Every structure is written in structure tokens, then in C-alpha cells.
Length: 582
Image 1 (spheres, rainbow, N blue to C red):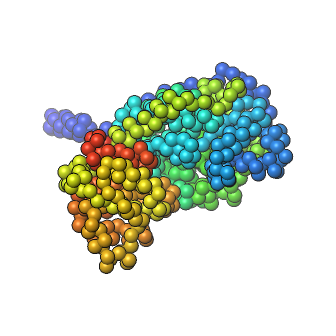
Image 2: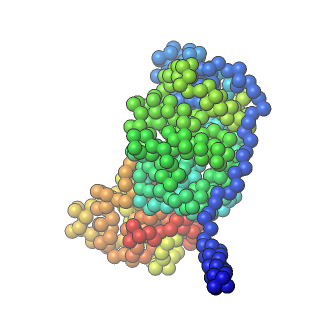
Image 3: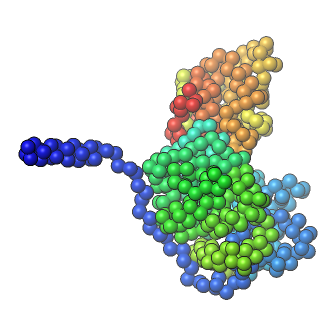
């Protein structure tokens, strides 16, 4: 009997061992290796409490308004000694005369700099280059173009170019790149702002991009922790979520963030994004977004992942952070208390309120000291403790030519051929007459005149650019297109244009309907934004192309590849076949 029991136990143990060996191992984060940002310079300890609080604030530089209120920026800084500003393009760009916009911005930045005891931290968002906002500079291809090109040297050049042009107007701290993954094709906020939906593809390109930025002495801010792109929620409107399981998150977002922390990334922006698989603490029965969650910022980022740099909030006037506290100031204070080191876009009253809370003991002085020490450590490593003689970098003509060349190289290596039933290259002898139809929320016909000119220079006849032709108007006169050999259907809806769902509605949808009624052997479908548009709306088109952004470099790459001047080199950086798109 005992022998039978022993044999039985041996068999059970053997089976359990086999099952355990065959069970897939749960993916773990890489080992956390704390990068040391602890500053050698300890002068931060001698700052007054208001000066310390000022270091944690990135205030919108409404220069004219602030001068009008205080008499001068110097007067403002005496009362509110802030450490950083964000340059709101909307407060400068639309004030005539247009040629004075950049000089006005530089004068304003110099005003804050001169009024500050330490170098002013100057921030902005230039995800597609400074030229995406100010046309005096270079409008670079999108991040997803980098993903399609999939070359680390190009990613480095991208980061270096954006940082160099940023430096030229005094911007020393950039609020990018995105470490988001475009996992959900219906996510309208991430789309082509992300490099890929694949962490293994994205990480080396992001690492190289940040190295290019750092080489120019510009601080990079990776965002939006714990990672956007998994759901369809837009954190500008409502609190979003990263709905991955812990193993899935560890394998993707978690691994990227941990590697970047280990590499010494200086700043992480937390999003208004929940992480349900990790979080337990609630407020009024709901999980807090990362920007308000001590559990995620301190428990996960600072302790478990050993992040020793600066945690910055996303803008706290966004819908994703709203409704948890009484007003925006209370939200900012709660974010700081929970672990944010640098608050994005607080009002000046934040300083008064935080000072009161610290003096009353509602927020410990140690929380403020921790934040300032982290900021000081990044300042020290990036040369932002001592003022420079000139805060505006002068870009030489040769450097400018290199930036233009690098941008074109990125576009040439990014443009991606999805389908080809027409036997590219296009030949003037066979496809001389071409019409361009723009499907987009905003009319991009003026931008597409560049494509028109490029095609004309190659001998094609291109006399028509239409925007969202409606089936209701065109249904009975589609024979208008009979005279054309090809119709280039150009999609372009980018982040925030429009704000809302990523798939097409209203006039854009009618434009697709109308073009879908044409013989599909005529159609050249090109997306200059969302990578899913062509495969979703024009899967039967004879030629399908993804170009990822409507900058001139990408337009030129499309025309050159279509006509055989360059090969199609790009590879699709996202999975195009999703159940939700079938």
C-alpha cells in the first residue's frame, strides 16, 4: 500500500513539474537601475519657500497680459519667482505683423530670463518640429514616419534637428517624445504621433531620438505614463485608461519606460490615464488618473521603477483631470501632493496656496524638497544652473541644409507602399492627366498644391484639387473624372484636427463615398496621417500608400516614389488588420 502511495506521489510531482515548466512565464520588467540625478550643487537648499515652489511651476508665458498686470515681468518675478514657462503659440502666432512673431517670442523669453535668478526653464511641444507651428523653421515628418523608416540614425537626426531649432528660439526643455503605442486603431489622440504599436520597434528609435535631443543640451520629456493608445478614450475630454494586464503592460509600456529610466531619461510626463490592473486606491469610488495618483507616481514610478528624475504633470486644465477636485487650483495642489514634481500650467495663485498648505503642515516640506532636488539634478546635468551669455543658438546655413536633408531622408525612407495593381512607376505616357481629391476635416488643398507642382514638373497635367466632393452634389456628374487617368485621393486628419473620433464623419465620409463610386483602377489612395485610412476606406484601390504626414518632405517622397525616382522603402509600423476595422 505504502509503495503504491509513493509511486502515486512521484507521478503527481512529475506531472506538476512538467506543467510548471510548460506554463508560460509571466513577463517581468527589466531590473530597475536607478540613474543618479542627485545634484552635487546644493544651493537649492538655500532657496526661500516661494523660490522652491517656483521651481515646480511651468507657467504659460502670457507676456503682454502679465506685463499689463504687474507692470513688468521683473515685478511679477519678485512676487512669483517661477522657475519655468511654456510658450503658448496661440498667444503670439496670430498677432500681426507676422514677421515679428519670432522676434516677439525671443524678446519675451529674454524678459523672463533676465528677471530670473537662475536660467529659465523654457518648454514647448514641437513633436513634428518647430516648423509645424512656426513656418520659419522645419516642419518635420511625424513620429510614425520614423517608425516606418525604422532607422536609429534617422531617429537621432530627427531629435537633434528639432532640438537645434528649438534652441534657436530659446526652448531648452521639450515636452516629447511620445512613448505611447498606437495599439487601438480607433484611438484619435495617439495615431501617427506614436512611432508604432510595437514596443520592440519603438524603443530603439525613441532612445536614439532622445540621444539626439540631449546632444543639443535639450531636456526630453517622455509621455504619457503609464502609456496611451490602448483604449479609444481621449484624455483631453475624459479620463483615459491603459487597460492592459500587468504581464501585457510589463512586456510593452513597462519595459520601454524602465529601459528609458535606466538610460537616464530626465523627465516623465504622467497622463490623465488610469491603470486598473495596478491600482487599488479610489476616490469617490473611481480610480484616479496617474496625474493624481500617489500609487502610480510614487509607488510604481519612483519606488518600484526607481525613477530619480522629474515627474511632470500633463496640463491640468484637461478634461481627464477634471471633476476629482473642486477646481483647477485644488487639482494642481493634489497632483503635487501625490508626487508631481513639476506642475504644467498652474496659475500663479498655486504658489500662494501651496505655501499656505506647507506652512500649515497639510503638505510636508519634504515633498517640496524632494521635487526641487529632482529638478535641480536635471538642471545640473543639462547646464541649467548658470546663465549663458546668449540663450538663442544661431543655426548656420550649413546646419540648416543638413536639417532639410535629414528631414527628406526620413520621408524617403518612410513612405510605404500598401498595394500596387497599376505597376508603379506612373508614366506620363500612360497616366498624363491626374486629379487630386483631398479628404479631410480642414481644407488642405493649399498644402496639396505642392504635390500638384511636383507632378507638373514631371510632365503630368494636374489642373484640379477638390476638397470633400459630396455624393449629394457629384452623384450625377461623376463623369467629370472620365477625363482623368488617375485620381490621387489624399487623406489628412491629424491629432486635434478634428478633435473627436478617428474615423471619418460628415463631409469627409461623403467624400469617401463619392470617390468610392469611381473605377478603383483610377484611384491612388494616400494617407498623410492616420495609417488605417487607406486599408479601411480604399482596400480595392489599385494603388495604396501611407506617408504619415503632409509636410513637404513627405509629399515629395510620395511623388518621387510613385514616379520611380526613389524606391518605396518604408515598412508598416502598425498592424493594419484589426477586428474592429473589419
